[in-house]
Amino acid sequence: MSKPTLWRTPTRLSRRLIAAKQPYRCLSCSFRLAQEQAKQDAKTTHFGFENVPESEKESRVGAVFSSVASSYDTMNDLMSLYIHRLWKDRFVRSLNPGLHPTTATTTSSSSPPQPQTLLDIAGGTGDIAFRLLSHATDINNDTMSRVIVSDINPAMLSEGKKRSLETPWAGSERLSWVEANAERLSMLDDASIDLYTVAFGIRNFTNKQAALEEAFRVLKPGGIFACLEFSKVGNRLLNGVYKRWSFGAIPLIGQLVAGDRESYQYLVESIEKFPSQREFVGMIEQAGFMVPEPAWEDLTGGIAAIHRGFKPV
Amino acid sequence: MANFSATKRLLSLPASARAAFLAPTRAFSVLKRPFPNYEGHVPLNVFERGALAAGSAVMSLLNPRRGDLIAALGETTATPYFIYRLRDAMLSNPTGRRILRDRPRITSRTMSVEKLRALPDNSVGRAYVGWLDGEGVSPDTRDSVKYIDNEECAYVMQRYRESHDFYHAITGLPVFVEGEVALKAFEFANTLLPMTGLSLFAVTRMKPAERSRFWQTYLPWAISNGLKSKEVINVYWEEELERDVADLRAELGLERPPDLRETRKTLREQRKAAKEEKEKISGLTSGKPFVGS
Image (cartoon, rainbow over all chains, first blue to last red):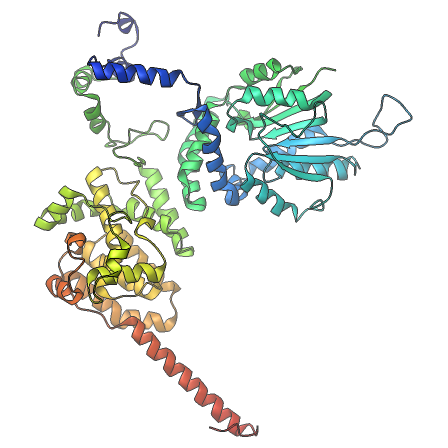
C-alpha cells in the first residue's frame, strides 16, 4: 500500500478493499489490461448498476419491457400501491391540455385556433395519452386535439392498442401510435408539436440529452416539455423506507406476479441512477428550454417529480 | 466499527477467497447485499425469504402452472436444515459422492433426446423421454437455483429438480395432477424437502374420486416406499439410462404403484357404459320409439 492518499482516507473496510486491488504485472496480464482499458474507453452507459456499452443498452431495455409488457399495469399498481394513478392524474391536470373554444386566443382573429398536437413519448400502454384526451375532451370541451403515442417497444404499443379499445378513441384520428426511438423522431417535422410529455420513460433512454434535444426540435416555439419521473427523496426517514421497499419488495413482487425478478431489479436500479431534480433541470436547460421557477414539482415527497420547460418563442 | 486485525487477515487473502467470508452468514440490508456465491445467486435476507416462501406458496396453489414459483418455494424453504440433510445423504453414499464431485447437469445438450428414443421400451432412458414428450417439455425447462446460499447445496437442489422426470420414469406415475401429487408425496418421504410436503396441499384442487384414490392407495404407497427405499437423489441417472426399469426399481427397493392411467381409463369406460345403459333404459320407459339395441 504505497499510495499516500490511503492514510488520509477513513480506514473503512470497503475503501481498503478497493485500494488493495493492485494490477498484475506479468506480460500477458499487462497486455490484457491494456485491452480492457481500450474497451472501457468505448462509450459506456449504465444499465441499472451495471455498466454496458451504449449499443447494448437499447436492446437490453427492450428485452426488459417486452417481458414486462403484459403485466405492466398490474405491476405498476402493486409496486406503487396505486399511487401512480394519482401522480399521472396530477401530471395531466397540471398541464391542462386542450384548447377551450371560448378562451383560446389566436394571433389573427379571423382564423380559428389550430387543434393541439400532443406527443406522448415512451407512452406504450397509453396511460398518459388517454388522460390527455379525456382532459381535453371532458374538461376543456376540445374535440379536435390529437395525441400521438410513441414507444420504441412494439410489445408495449400492442398493450396500449388493446387498452385503447375500451376508450372512445380507439381507431379515431385523435389517437395514433408510432414505433420510434425518442432520440430520433424522424417521422415528426420540426416545430410540429404543442405538448411533449414523457412519463416514467426517460430514465430508460440510452442518451437522455439527445432525447431532450430531439424534444426541442419537434416542439413549436412556445411549446411545453413535461416529464414525470422518479426522483430523489429529501426526507431521510421516507427515503430509508422507500429504498428498502424498492430493493426488497419490488423485485419480490416482480417474481411473484410477473415471474421476472431481473427486470424489476433493473427498474429499481435505473431509478437509483437517474439524476436529481436540480441536475435534470440543468439537462433540460442545456437542450435549450427555459425552465421558470419553481423548476420542478415534487410528488409524494420526491419519489416522483414533474419537470416542465418551454421552448422560447 | 471495523475490526482491524480481522480486516488485515481478510485483505491478505486473494480477492476470490474473500467472497466466502463475506457470504451471508449474518443479517443484511436489501440495500447492501453480499456478493453472490455462484452465478445466478441472489442472496436474500430472512424477511425476503419468508415473504417469498409465503407468497409463492399461495400463488402456486392458485395457479399451479407457475413452475418458477414452485421452484422458488422449494429453495426458500429448503434452508436451514433440509437441504443440508440431503447433501449429507449424498455425501454418505459412494455414488452420491461421485455425483457431487462430477456435478453432472441434465440439459438438452448432455441428454441427447434422439439417442434416448432409440433405446428399448423398458429402459430408464426410454421411459424418461416418454414423459418429456408426454408433457411437451425438454430437459431445459427447469429453472436454475437462485436462492440457496451454499454453492454445493445449490447444486444438490438443481440435481433434485433435474432428476424429477426420472422419478416419474421409475415409479410410472403420469404427469397430470393426480400423478404429480402422488410423486410429491413419495419425494417427501424420500428426500424430506419441505416443498414436496407443501405441494400436498394440491389435494384440495383434485376431484373427490381422485382424492379418495389418493388417501386410500397412493399416499400409503408413497409413504411406505419413500421410507423403505434407498435415497433416489443418489442415483447416477446418466449411467442408468440403458438399464431395465424393473431392475433399477428392485435395486432401490421400490414397488410400482397401481397404474394410474389404466385405473382411470377403466373407470372412464365403466362410467361411459353405465351412462349408455341409463340412456337406453330411460328411452324405453319414456314412451319414445324404440331405437333398437
